[in-house]
Image (cartoon, rainbow, N blue to C red):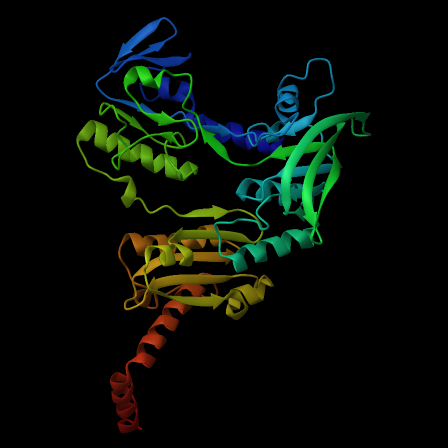
Length: 419
């Protein structure tokens, strides 16, 4: 109930009522589609435009699993039958009964955040995946830290699935009133492939979103799109019709609310005021809100390797941070990557409590072209976890000094003179 209340509170800021009554926006409620390259049809109304933006977002994708689409539809429109909890992130928070056993398809951000929460609330959670690991974009040692904590919480992982075979109701109604669900997979266990059946009373499909680009006659407007990739845009977020722009999940690989917001800001500046804001200039941090959190910005080491960029890495473990020691929460680290021959920050990852907040300091440094060496001069309140960022800057400056034999010799001489 609290979650639904908070969602309702947050939604008021983006409600049609607020836009219409407080901001003076003409809001048309209905199904919209393009009539041609410069007009949109909403119900019986035809609206002509000089500029337009498509911001239709995305929707949860359902993998090809026998029976999944039917059970997901039955969850949405149960009729007189008990509602099977076969959900996506869009319907997950509509639950009114706590499941005893939850299976999550997909070991990504959404699956891990919700999986850990449900496990700590008392539901037995199993996460299944194909890749052999969780959070594949993150550095392996960082994702292993998150996985170890979830396993300590009681979450079970089955990450060597080669095929999701089927999902169906067993016909049994459990004590909590939920229908039992049978999920059949083919997986590799101890070097052998075998078929396994997992019995649960709830399934969350967390395999990522797909762009919402169908049903609006984009072709009539001369807008090119792909049902998997989304709407084709240039660096200024213009579509193949220069009058029409796009922003958010419908056209971007960055599937984050904050990324969509800043893309929308760029579209407003470019479409209405003639600016030339570029998508490639947006520096987008992101966080996974598990416990501990993991947050990143910029390039990972593997990104640098692919681009042929030489770099150095500086780390500070929270086991050496006084605030973390006081709190008894020393899991994690700050990891910052810089150019090989300068202190220009290429990217960073923070694992630990409050990582989603701490990453903003490094994002600001990168946005303002502040180097890692300069961060060593930023005074942080003591004791705080953010001191680890300053200490990473200290590590860079020490390494720089150690590499300069001449300067090191001069400084030693000055110290001897003053003794």
